[in-house]
Image 1: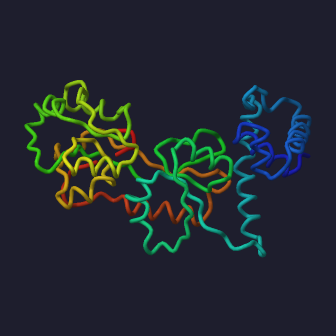
Image 2: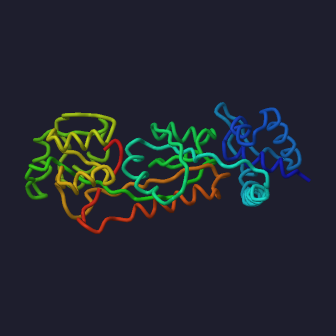
Image 3: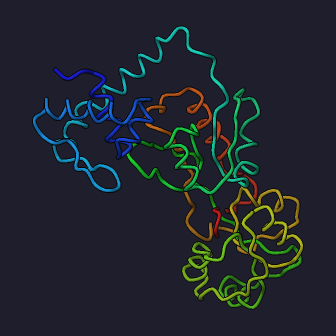
Length: 303
């Protein structure tokens, strides 16, 4: 009969997509992981993975075995963690996110949570790589998990606001697209996929506004709008304070101008039952409840 450790190694290889990733996950050497996997394949009598230059891909037999054992391995690992009496006290939750999301959304959700957090700021794809490598415990991002070793918890469906300087007087929605194209635009990136979708789908024209400022920081973008440098499409969490204080103007009140974008907390499958992660998800979901005041909406970096 195959050992429990062999099944643990198999599940780790399946989720990380590589022997090296499983070795990091299980705190083993790569030769030890390869030996355990070879022994399990010998026991099964079939190959469980196909080796590729970039890692491994499960065979059909591997997929069947994973479906049979993964849940049991996870439950046994959770039970083992719960029985550790002399475990060291937990350190801060190592959380990755963008600077703007930390400032505008995460921090307002933390009072009363009694949770110690060590934040790492950076691009979403880099942060997901750090979660997969075990350097971070979790990341908050709009990107879905890139591999089988990671899982996600939905946190909020963020809305966008189309905002301009407070002294701008926009025309009717039917004429708004052409009116905006004749005025300057500020943004956090040059690609502007969400902005272009707004113009084509909601405003009925192609985006052609001249760029006045491109800065990879949503706080700087909103501040530029306050100073009259141009209009932008910004996440509600980035624009709400300025809107409430009258420092910017909502150029398209009413329904959300584009579909909201989902933010999620991504962590390793093996950490899915951690109490600190679950409490953080609940706090962020509570903080994401839509405001009751103005009825308009507003999300995303790279808008």
